[in-house]
Length: 441
Image 1: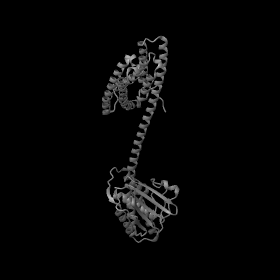
Image 2: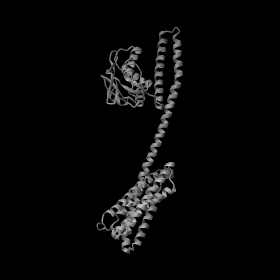
Image 3: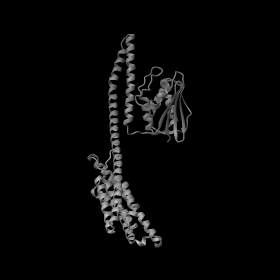
Image 4: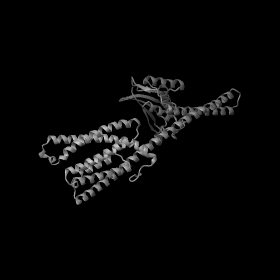
């Protein structure tokens, strides 16, 4: 942590930090003046309620006057702090008037503690508690630059000396009191500068974090745009290659050529799948508007499963434990992709006749969808990374289906956009369960 005990901040940070801490100081003055005002009003009430025989106040007529003055100054500082705070909130900029006002409040609180010590006893050396409290409160409550702290320390010392002279202190008494005052003011200076350093470093760390976050957001946005553009532009050449392969199949070709064409078409299909995943990933990161509608999930799941049975000619997919009614807010197109991806993975890693179950249940205020299979399972060391983009956990399916490493990452993005969460449980050789939890509507 860089210290600033005897120096000002660098010019780069000085203005922005001054604007920040001035607002904080004005709030501190507002709160401090309220507390100061309430304390003096309470003292006034106690002074009025209790008889003089229980106090020593009758011996100090200055107490009565000082208490009324403190009540008045407390009210004035409160009103001024409210007005200056209103002005500060308009443009968030510090002004010389604000700085002078805060400096005056600090000197006022120190002087009040100092003067109260003189009122308590003829020799303030015997009762410096209030003086010490005033210095401590200001050192913790307000932030001052090096020059302001130095001027505040000098100003307090001059006031203390003036009060000693007014009290006609003898040379010995003045020497001891000045020595104690110097010790207290030295402590005040060091504490004030230490808290200035602490608060300044904390503020600059926040600024740096915000700047880094902005840079990361810009880089992420650029990456997504670049990813989407590249993936989109790759569609045309791949489509052209696939079209040429299909045209070549119309001619009389030998078995070797047909095998090569099949390889080309399979590669084009795989490339097209990767491109679609890249585009979907980019769209999910960039889409600010995400429209959802209230949907009855039982019907949605049954339709999805039925569609899989018809299109993929699979009979080992079934829906279990439906909860009716089960309403959620979903984007039909996006959530369909989630289900298709999870069901596709379950079938891809299951044997021909192994059952894949889609289970719908309700837990508290959430709707839970589980896709269960009894396939090959996921290794324990890869469970934690399966939702990462371009994950190394991707594997070839039982029928040779290739993985892009993006499917589950896209699934997680979509589920989180639905304000839900997804988790996976698996045991090698016994199967996997993917669980989606959505807030019920």
